[in-house]
Image (tube, rainbow, N blue to C red; front, top):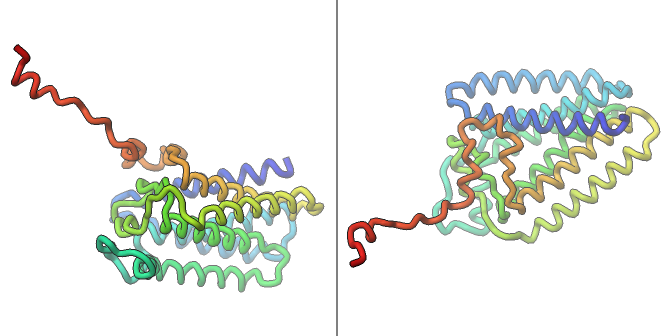
Amino acid sequence: MDYALPIAYALFLWWFSTGLIFYLDQLPVRTFKWSMAGATAVLGLSFYAMWSTADDTSRWAAYVSFSGGLLAWGWQEISLYTGFVTGPRKTRCAAGCSGWRHFGHAIQVNLWHEIAIILVAIAIAAMTWESANQWGLWTYLLLWSLHLSARLNVFLGVRNVSEEFVPAHMEVLKSFLTRKPMNLLFPFSVTAATIGAVLLFGEAFSAEADHHVTGYSLLAALMALAVVEHWFLMLPLPVEKLWHWSLPARRNAAKSRKPAPPKFDYTTLKTNPTP
């Protein structure tokens, strides 16, 4: 239970919070102000959770700090996909746009979002600097690095771009999703994530203090999820089924990946019967 409970907790919190964000960002636009207000309140609570447990080395404090870091990251996700914190560019790229020019347009679409990520990271680091309990900070930084890796891979090209997870009002993001069998970054990304997961599990299994066992187990679970998520980018699996409950308006998304087989046209046979 020393390892199983934090791993299960990390998996559940990641799965549920991700599904909740998917659910909120496909609701009517008029609800977004309330979603952002609630998410901002949760962000404030996450700051308080990490600050108040910064010097606490109990097992419970590791859970609280980890949860704070993950929920702070959730604010970044919901602020982007509701369209509140995006970037100065609001239009899709024209056909034929590629290379560094295309990459520059991608940065423009997400610029304010990326700046917000940095500002929140600085705030968390400031409130937990040189503290005994920094699991929230490491959680946030880990999610940031994994998010960046996944987005770069999707930009460069993957088999499974999961367009169904992009809400209709953020259609501009779809022009930066590239479908390819492979890209040069992917092998390095998935290898680095795998090594990171092994190292974190190793730290968890070798740790003696309960606080470290819990903290490293939580981070290791997230890193293992990152390995799975990266492989999801390359394998044509129905990923949306993991959050079927949170996508009521997009439940037929999986069907859109494979075009329907052509149907035989019987019109000619009916109008020109064989003698």
